[in-house]
Picture 1: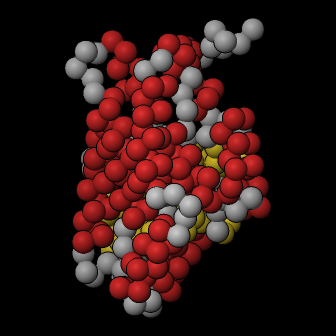
Picture 2: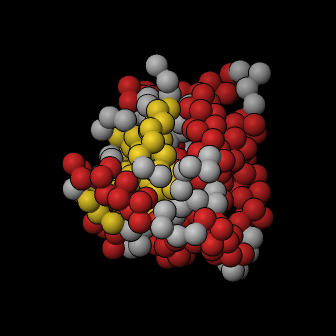
Length: 258
């Protein structure tokens, strides 16, 4: 079974994360397959917009924590490479010269919320939830933070990242994290309709607009991502991370809780 499904819809490429039995968690293989699919769509002159969605009831549960947990006992593991690959995936979506649309069909958690945040437009099903619970696992949403700060500002980013709470679709829309809330059965149709609307823009003008939007930010996004990767790795390899992930799998409280 392919980890990523790609379908053509008029002038859009619909890319579906296809690992529903694992809640579309971002394994190394899925990250690589998704990056390849995004790159292929970005390079295809017939594709004018990209839609990303998930198979099953969950959009994306974030990093595959089983793989992260195994890193602590695997001398051959390369978390730096894994982190760079994840960052490259997010940036492939964000920096793509074509409009990118996340059609969030269910929970978008941690790195899954990051995947959503890397897109230009975010449409969410009205029963979907979004959250950044990394701190509850002894991790930090460092890479995701780069995109989140640009979208909701410091105050809401602190609330989401420090509290680690899951919020519903209506609240995500209220704070400006998503563009539209849509009925679940209309989500993909709306995403494809939006892709068609965006395809009426001149390709060069769309690409230039996206580039300029980044350049007009206070700091270049690539500089922020470099620092984010450093912090992500520092925390990912910590004792707290080991304990938090182990507690998650053992369904118990981590040792920093009474």
